[in-house]
Amino acid sequence: MAQLNLCSLLLVASFALVLAIHLSAAHPRKLMKSTKIPSLNEVKGYLQAHGYMERPEDRPTGTSGDSLMIESSLKPAIRMYQEWNHLEVTGKLNSETIARMMTPRCGMPDIIRIPDKGVHHESKPGKFHVVAHYSFKNMNPWSQRQLTSNFMSTIPSVPIRDLRAICTRAFQHWAAVSPFRFREARQGEVANIKIGFYTRDHGDGYPIDGPGHTWAHAFAPRDGRLHCDGSENWSISTPTTYQTDLESVTLHEIGHTLGLNHSQDPDAVMYAYLNAGVTKRQLQQDDITRD
Ligand SMILES: *[C@@H]1O[C@H](CO)[C@@H](O)[C@H](O)[C@H]1NC(C)=O
Ligand SMILES: *[C@@H]1O[C@H](CO)[C@@H](O)[C@H](O)[C@H]1NC(C)=O
Ligand SMILES: [Zn+2]
Ligand SMILES: [Zn+2]
Image (cartoon, rainbow, N blue to C red; front, side):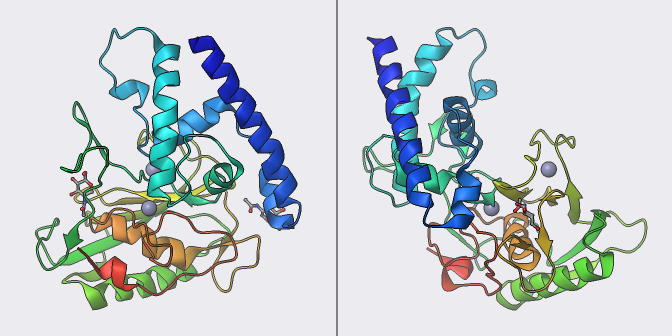
């Protein structure tokens, strides 16, 4: 029975993939993205990375029946993904769901899992809820207004003076709507927000995936590390359809370093997805007051 369910899921998945590729033929950009078909393992990894499914490392040690567990949690995880992403909630990997999963995005989770408690639950039964209520007025997760930043590593394709100019503009947007003020750390001073470009494993337990898929991640206060994927095609001015806009991405990631979680509003800077060629350089109402 369990075997059968997994098989039918795989069948649905492969059918959906064929469909996805077929549909994307009308969009050359998407076709290029879709040529790499995600395996069921990749889908699982994606759902785990973004908080929809328990990661093996979060599970109590000594639990057995791994494949059974994965199978039984995959469908609810897909449902949760569809619900959070305002897609039709079917629990199936349909083309719409796969297309969303293949959209370039931020590496941080959408759902924050609290160890031992699973996902935060609202009082409404059957509804998951993410603690994303946050207003600068009510809390300062840094306990200081003046925050410093520095550049830990750069890549040749983004000269430091362009990176500095882009980050300065992004910080100015946040300074305008928050109690925070930003300046670059002095030589030898420990910065609050540490900005750099990395590839693959780089020591924080969140390896960077290479070109496409995720473009950056950043940690909440008072960690402040902000890591961009060194293998993306970064744009420092107006992005072409093959480039990711660095200013839009730094604006988003700085939001995480100030304590914001992902927004479900597609117009918000804190929305998790951003396609190549798109700019989103203005904070929206949802980024500023979410309540
Ligand atoms: C983001 O989610 C985590 C976990 O639920 C929570 O501790 C944190 O306060 C949230 N941040 C904001 C700004 O809501
Ligand atoms: C980077 O740009 C080249 C074309 O200049 C394109 O072929 C490649 O797919 C792009 N990579 C990504 C990750 O967008
Ligand atoms: Zn993010
Ligand atoms: Zn990192």
